[in-house]
Length: 221
Image 1: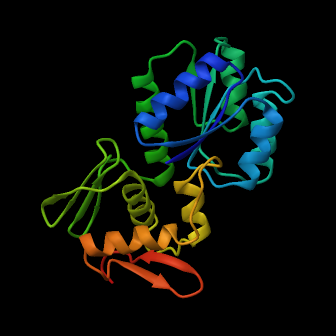
Image 2: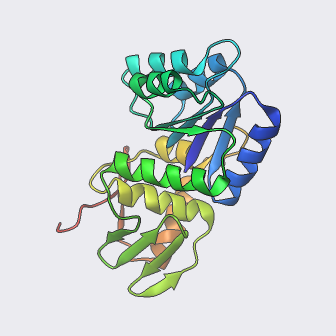
């Protein structure tokens, strides 16, 4: 998953980027509220990790502006403000969860998984689509009962399509979910990932919709 991190503490930010990347996420890190808001509005992310005490534009105002524009991006607030008023303000402004610093990385990972499941309307952590099973937590995939060996971006692309079964996802949307701003993306990168996945799965599982993108059909079709 591509995560937007808006945090001005250098030491904490570096630690979070390392921890999230080791769990298979792509992280774009911004140090100010102004740049973080611009990134959230211009790019596609699966989650926003948001500090409150930011230079330029504080986290509550950033979140207020984001929600005012109709953004449904899941948001977890990360802050040292451990008062009831601060928690209420963050949640009432539209945050999905609130984690007080200092916190354990394992708890952050668990909160991320829970927020994403709630937003997707899933109670179970494992995705099942016909003979395909995906475990985003363990980053494991099985096809027809056999475990698949999938590189990170193939796994994330497949997960994105299955989570959005029945919906066309454009190449640009997939690129934004798979790659960070610092990545050099080849023009045919998504096509290559899809080609490799089709060789490992049923070729018809991922359909190309000419001029629009890719789709995994809903079950039952």
